[in-house]
Amino acid sequence: MLDEEESKQAYDNKIQRRSSVFTVVNDLYFYDLKMDYNYKNLTHCDFFNNNKSKLLNGINNFEEKINIKNNLLGIFYLFISVFLFSVAHLISKFLIIYFPKVENLANNFIRGVILILISHILLRKRKINMLKQLKSNNYKSIILVVRCFFGAICNITLFESFKFMRISSAFTIFCTYPIFVSILSIFILKSSFYFLDFMSYLACIIAVFLISKPVLFFPNKSNETGSDTAYGVFLSILSALLNAIGVYLNKTIAFDFDNLISTFFFGFWFILSSGLLLPFTEYSLMTLDFASFSLITLSSLIFFLGVILFVEALNVGEPIKILPVFYFGIIFSLIYNSVIFGKTTDFLDILGSFIIIFFNVLGTFNLKSSSK
Image 1 (cartoon, helix red, strand yellow):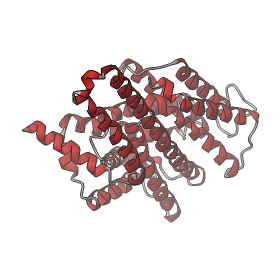
Image 2: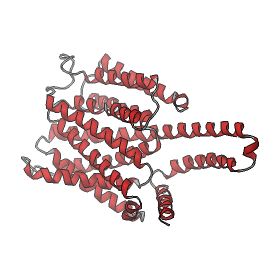
Image 3: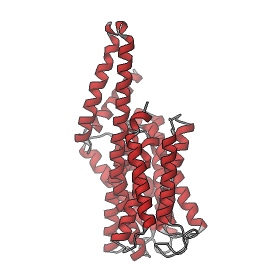
Image 4: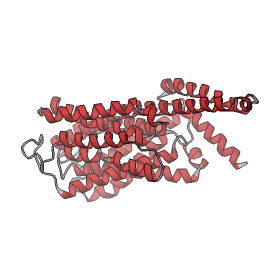
């Protein structure tokens, strides 16, 4: 009886997800998958016994097609998510430069409040019973809460690292988190890892190195003033590692919960972790004014959409295949530096950007062969 209730709850969860902000894309996508799986049902008829080899080959082809669609859709979602995150980071960078007395913890605290409010309103509007979904699987509910904890702390440590090193360097180090995900995927999830995957990650790391131009190796080419401290490097590496763990845990949850529940718990951890430390900071919330509060609110709204798409991308695609797309965030940051902050773009910037785009496009075209 319990199994039947859990199955029904899982089905209800999937139906509720279909009415999300991705309705148009997902309706077309899942309709195509439904046609594929209906074809698989032929295996239950007598015809299967007489044409076993032919049908098995057809099923394998359909499974390959589904894997390709999953990864391509995940790439699409992740690309939009990366763009939204880059805008949120741009606003955070603007706050640090022009509102230096606004605490990062204040930024994260307000962000948490906004995430919870939006998630709660949308959950009620869509008549989604969050407690019912959480009770349907206690084990995965715990994983969900832990995963959101890692995601929230990851962002807090990333923003904090901006104080102790150049923002470009901090974000560059953070963008190495797909490497940690790859390690977890290979050794724990037993994901396939091919030579092109290795070359893609290696090339992207080199490209990130060329674009960020660390002061230690390019003392005359740094686009931003300031030095990178060991503590700042530690915080940014910790942020990348925490985010990788969150990505790994997210794949375990898959489609069991509505994405709004994830953003709700992201907000919960932002509020709890920031709220406990905020009273011990120098300025707390006292330095907030209308301008800074408006920027934080805008950043939080953009971050909310980015989280929704990021979670969806990881649910749909295979992390080890789609995460290199995250490196496009470096290119977005490069554009912002040139257009908004007036930083120059040199040959190393162009070369690094070309390497990132080339290997990610090459990896996309190789999804068919690597999904076999």
